[in-house]
Length: 242
Image (cartoon, rainbow, N blue to C red; front, side):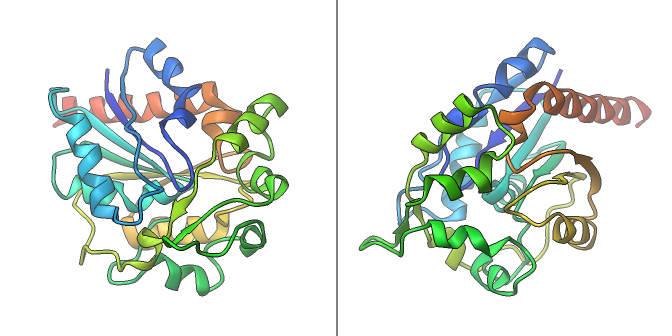
């Protein structure tokens, strides 16, 4: 059994793990899925990380596996810098570059498919952006999800404060924690070629690939749960070997 801390990405909330969570519990795992204040301009990546750490207080055990989806991939290294965890799992993730902002990396051109930007509002008076084109939101996040799931998910997207994109990633180096990167070959947001390259270069991650788009927890929750369970089994075996 492992404790999975599921860290959602931009515009989303803890609701997005609703199909994956029962699959993990059914396989004997514990799940912690905090809701992050993505719509609050004062919240930084460190704010997000502190909320995840607080959610894990009292859970007990040393079996925590952090799963960071999309923007959550920039949060989980900060959590691991403060509390002991067994594995970092980057899921279709924006893996940060120490000393640089995500905005700088996005402007570099190869991190994301920039067509999604035309579906967003400009920055509002509080420095937040919202989805204005539901069709583009669906293409970016949910292109291979069942219609009902995709439509409901688009309707639940929040505005996203741009603070975490503008700030420089605060760590000088990544924590010394084993990492796995799960890449979806049909991801219409985070480019798979970029993910394959930086997963090795930045975090030395084992790379696993799934079919489909950016949100496998909604399109393929059972398959993703099986993959995460295998990762937990590998962590348990490494403990035995040690």
